[in-house]
Length: 87
Image (tube, rainbow, N blue to C red):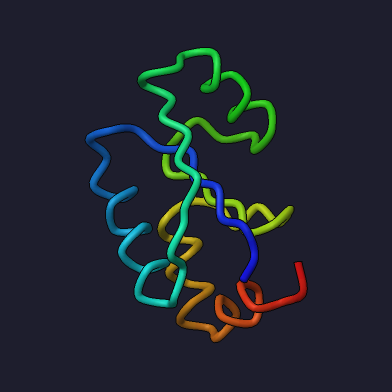
């Protein structure tokens, strides 16, 4: 399964929903980058994604987006193939 990285904050409900969705699809490890604990990482997230909100999810090198994007990808049947693609 591909590596999952999620830019997040400690109290973000959408981040928690994204984590629950990923875990329900078999992801056991999510590298969380807490931008409220490491403010410099917020700049990194914004320059890398072009977005200001959390969560921002990467599966491998693919930027999936936020929770709504992740959920839509899952409903469309694209999440599992992306997670299972050769790393």
